[in-house]
Image 1: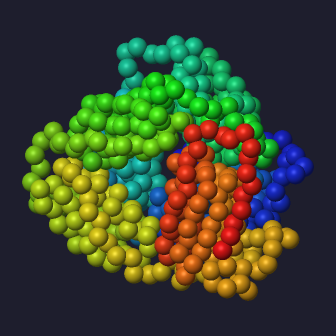
Image 2: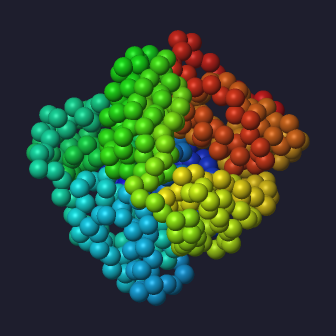
Length: 495
């Protein structure tokens, strides 16, 4: 993620109070798993959030920044977070990073060289695109012991034929129109000698970062977003109405194919895309499980996609013995900064990986499954990890999250009513969920979600927030709209 540094005008009236934004972020950091929130300080001035302090790995640093950017009312982020992790000898760390890049099916043949010194990894060599460079950085950040990286010597070679300024602008606008994570209705794009200038207004700081990333992946050599401002009023659903208007199946299919081409993992795969009534079917063969999973996720990020049927078959380009796959998975789990301290049972039979053992949180369970899915030769992952610690054990100071006059103190309510109140508060502070038409019912710690949301991403986020608020189980019956309805319903929460 690229930390946003905004040059912003004074906050307009009607913006959320800085103290409330700070309290919301502090509480979210305290309840999101994988973070050491007590080491992170939060300050907010006119909607601009400043994070300082420490995390214990680079992935956690990025996670903390993303959490802050997604809070309603945040207009920008200045991050001074440092990484404190266990000391790993330079030679051992360099070997671990090189092994991680070699074990990843996408980066194993990249021309990348590594040098580790006191926890900082210097990368050099050549990649073909900005997206490939970001993929390399993500792999490096996922190695325990890495405190930072230097990537100026990792050069982007690019192709022999460069897009014209007009082509870059057109492709950026198309990506803005089809990506469910952003709304570019109020954004102006200009390109001059492959330098992209973005101006206008978006509703969240996270959107601004995503728009900048889209411009880079489309071919920009530099992106100037100093005149792209974040304003609370730009979250109004009326502004998003046109983006979520009905799309034809042909247009959705073309947008999905274009999106897949930007992913360096997926673009070389033999993927057939078919669309019927907004339901995307992915068929064909891919060389590894990570491509299969990424293709589905990318498709779900396209406007108009109601559901995805993933029929992609994993057929590795070479036969990898089960024992080699098992060792690769075990090594990847051991060097991961989130789950490397845990003990896993790993078995592989016919390319099918089985994970067993205890973990503390649902986050660790899902993350371990993702790590295993990235190993070459894996056809599927059967995740049998058991969550031993209930999410509700860590009770934050929830009243601090509530703005003045927000209602009764949740800690004075019955457990189910208190849980519903906590979920409601999290939805209220979410830039994507605060005005959606959804209802929560809670019984014996089980949350049932009903109603409608704009996108698949909102549906998944609603379930994640309910679980992290303390629900031990979530029944997600939310329906994804294929358009913004003419009459917008209110946001209600019931227990």
